[in-house]
Length: 477
Image 1 (cartoon, rainbow, N blue to C red):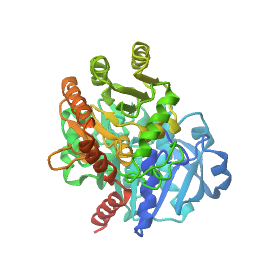
Image 2 (cartoon, rainbow, N blue to C red; image 1 turned 45 degrees about the vertical axis):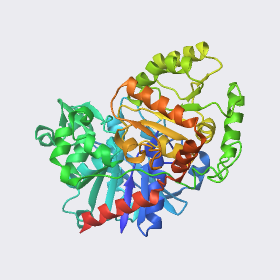
Image 3 (cartoon, rainbow, N blue to C red; image 1 turned 180 degrees about the vertical axis):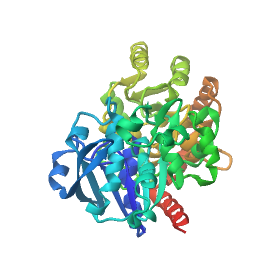
Image 4 (tube, one colour; image 1 turned 60 degrees about the vertical axis):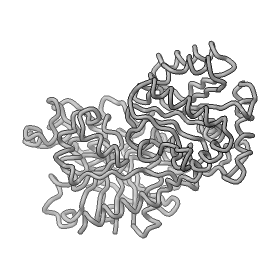
């Protein structure tokens, strides 16, 4: 079976979020299961010279952008056993950053069309094209509208993977003719129309043969109005074709025994070294050094949907009345950044606020903290809680999306569960959860059981990859 994975970013070449982690891991695991999985993404200016110099030029064509013809080259690179293709166009992709430009509709519709038109130059004819999020959604549209009648394309099946329904690629309707070059009938019949605008993600859903998203619970949630971002009706109508497959993590990358970012490596049999990591992190961050003081941590974007409002409503009381420390790393809305800076000013011996992002510090936090806070309002999958578990850092999460699928409530009586969870979007429920966690932390026997459960949790990509393969096989059958 041959699969082409179409994505706007992929580790290690370019990354702005979790989508890149998936694109850098899943194809490798599909390959290990005997699937000829290849990846295609734009050739951004930000990709390092190390990778750019190693690319082999495969071919070039012109791609129609409505009434215009634009150059599209394709380069190729083998990395960790996976073939990556890069769509080259300096006008569209040689810029600082990836998204947020005035012509994003033109840039990514060009990318979607180029992917299909470059298949002959690549000499790769996939059985399945798996496109991801709005940036690649029009692959499904162009395949059905522009390539049927060509025997090389007619048997290709499509999967559209939704990583975050909130970001849909919504643009002025006038791009139908001037950018997309599509007949207005596909707007007027509702295939692409959304509140009198063009919606790339909607088109991807309408024209896909199968739809997937990044956790079982999120697949259920987005069929309801609260999580559905005004596409819940469409998703309900396609519920038989919608499947949730929970993301994994690459255990070879996130391994406390080999992670070079940690002060000391450890495993389930040497968790005393995790406490040494905590002491050294406390020292680095200017906090009082105490291995017995529980450390709660967050590595997160500081935006509302990450549950920041819930955190804000409990921290003053928590830090005033409990012996604990709080560490946060991330950037986001200025009002939240300023609030946390002021919190550190009020609790200088209990709080460390780091308003930037550093992969090195993030890994040190995963390897050092006792608890990982992730009370998201919605979370399609989430990766932080899975990394935390791998490092024996117990997650405290809200039961939504992938958090619900990966974190189970700890029960000290039968030693089941790997973390603490609460259901309602309610600060009192979060506070109860945290206080319960701190109480059980003080009981060394209970804490040891919970920490062992956490570190034994396994969310390796292999299981998820086999679920993708099962979906592909069903589609081809």
